[in-house]
Amino acid sequence: MQTEPEVITEHSELMNSTNIERIVTGRDAALVQIEQLIQQLETISQLTAGTGGGNASDWAMKQGHRYDCWLMEKPEKALPVITRNIDRSLWRDLMLKSGMLSLMDAQARTQWYQNLEDCELPTISEANILSTFKQLHQSKADVFERGIINVFKGLSWDYKTNSPCYFGKKIIISNLVTHNRWGYSLTWEYRRDQLADLERMLFLLDGKAIPDNRADISINLMNHIRDIPGKDAYGDSYFSIRYFQKGTAHLTFKRPELVEKINDIIAKHYPDQLPPSTNQRF
Image (cartoon, rainbow, N blue to C red; front, top):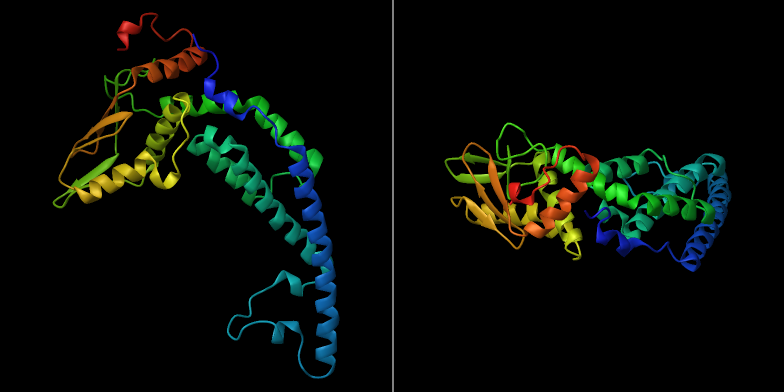
């Protein structure tokens, strides 16, 4: 039984310490200059206001676009917000470059981005970056496997084809498409994320680079259905998909050896459920 996906080794190195130092140094230097800029704007604003020319909010904003600008606020009010905004962008960029997002399923990625928006991440510093990515590195196998388990648990057990013990050669996904007199269309529900998550797992287990989210299976299937709305079948290197007017889709795996790897992971989490004979699965 394979206990850890080979793909995990692709992200085994922590981020280069020199790059981290450059990021932190640049961020700190920028914040110092921003504070100086706010103070300079305040000084200039007082000068123009004293001569009847109005303050910065009068002459620095476009007509009809007098929106709040943090550079116009006092440093003690503006800098905490500006710092959080910069740190949020830096964490987002660091996460993208680390490759960790590719191991996450849609639910985990949504939670990560929600943490960014809620500012539930530490202040950018060399120690915090190293600590955060060390923790992510140590948990990356769990993150990847949790994504597989979430896809597995998200299947509907109303269909005999979907086994609550393992992935077979075919699964049935409900509510993936809709049908009307003009033909088929792909739904915008969570089933699309589920399908894209499943494809991403297969790419990773196959040792291949994950496609851009603008070219994942949900997008390709949507384009296929849009271009040929009357057709009820789609295929690529991993899947053969047949969809029906009631909204269900029958998905047949083309790479059984990759599904075996997925089932190894499921068996690791549910050791008493997976049948011992692979003949029962394929």
